[in-house]
Length: 169
Image 1 (tube, rainbow, N blue to C red):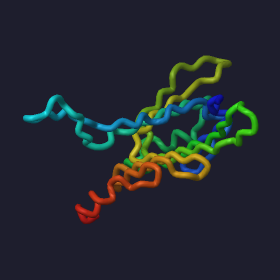
Image 2: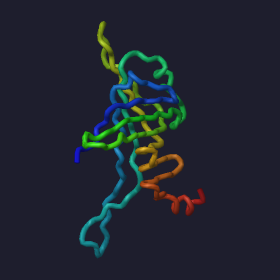
Image 3: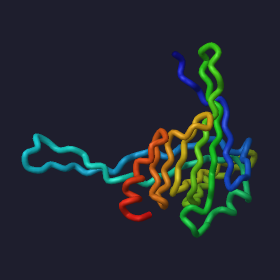
Image 4: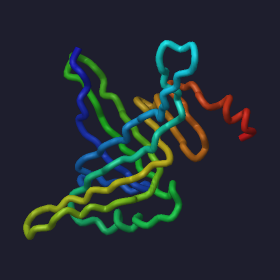
């Protein structure tokens, strides 16, 4: 089978489309925080799951966009909603195009303007620490992480529901 390839994408920040301006996206790495544990009677250590590591995302834009810069300095940790919409398709026969959607919330932490030269398009790299991350394919939720509201769903299973209930939240 031939793997799916991203054919095209668009970025939306706070509902504004950046079609033709967003050049590249680096979605967050999903990493569990773990700690080795070994007690008496154990043959070796096991890794204890201590929760989700921090989430960060980077987006590279082309050109000079003042609307994008207006989101810098947002005070709330989840002030800026960003949505990636992509079309992925395999070259194998009659395979349909998959709609990939990544929805996140965070704030603009770092703006890297790079260098500027007359007659050349500059790039603006934006680093965004995230409080929430959702990954969907064709409208089906695969992963939903909301750090502030203690939500962690994978393939429709709420893995923190019992913990929230135990805490009364």
